[in-house]
Length: 195
Image (cartoon, rainbow, N blue to C red; front, side, top):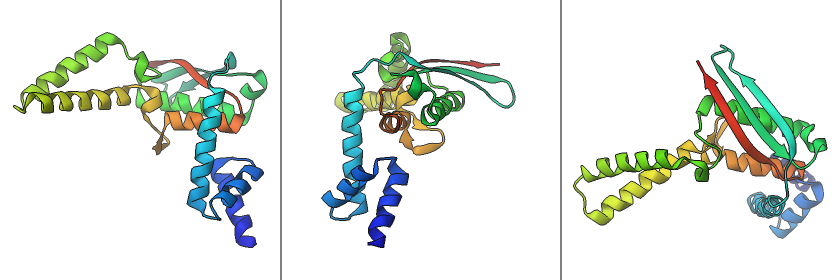
């Protein structure tokens, strides 16, 4: 029985899920930790997807200034209620996003927000580089699309690996925060200044 309690404690610390959710997930996976993690992740994603349609008009504007004073960031992060905006989990998420923007220099919040002219310029460069390889046209097209996909994921905040934990993307961190606070959370916009 002690091992079951240890598993529950471990999963709660890892996922911030409620105790009953963790117990159910362990029961469904016959005590398997990895299976329980998968169940909790699937449920969390489903909950986050439901919440994402709700309007988020409260929140904070987080300010980050790099220690040398040469980089500054303003980030607007929204949630549904001012109560959640004051919670430690939400505040920490906003701080983490601001720190990430300062260090990783994203171009925009999501891939859909990448300016058309920047995308066209990058596509032109990729096409020239791929053409120089002398591969067949269908292979060249695949190379170009692969490079564009990689480039866009590097430019958009949500698809970048999180600066403090490269094993997860900022999008995954956002989904975890939605699960923790129980409301829709949106990274609305940011601006980064550098001397």
